[in-house]
Image (cartoon, rainbow, N blue to C red; front, top):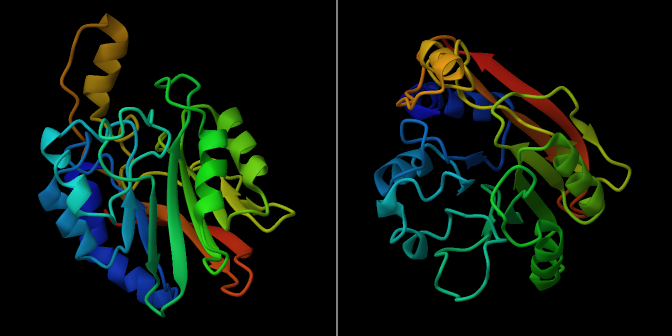
Length: 255
């Protein structure tokens, strides 16, 4: 979330990766540019920190210069369930395939929910289509489900149980306490939380946000600065089967 979140990653991500013996770092970057979208320069900056691939979300198009960057940067992933016609309407892809630091193949997959959000194509059916395209040899399959409703996120996790390594919820910025591994071996959490300032209203300066609720007048949202935390989840998974062994929350207060 804005420069406070980026600074937290710059100062602490490498240390956390070493401490926890992380082989693969993935991130959601849709609020990197002052809380709204991402630019090519900021994408490059985040990749330079050791992030292997990044998902986005409903703010993905807020910075127009990113539109031309998607075809050039496959590691930057947008939601797969944008309408598929015409094909060039939404640049980029909803799936990225790569290798971890130790050479393990993985797929990062990204879909967006529809409840209380944009009326995109059905994420459930689109995920079925994309999973069918993955080779059997790609066992590690990580899904970022960017959605508003907790019910839709949990339904999506159960729907994919046993078919992907993890379903990680994003969008609501608040880390939830329901991390678990489903019976089929899929790790799940409703929301992994934001990396950014928590003395705020979901990352926004709290005085601005409160004023908006009081008077309903237009305001310019800006990120807060205090109580910055690095948040996410750590997943242990079998590279032979793709099944998750464990999932744990990471929350590091950095200022």
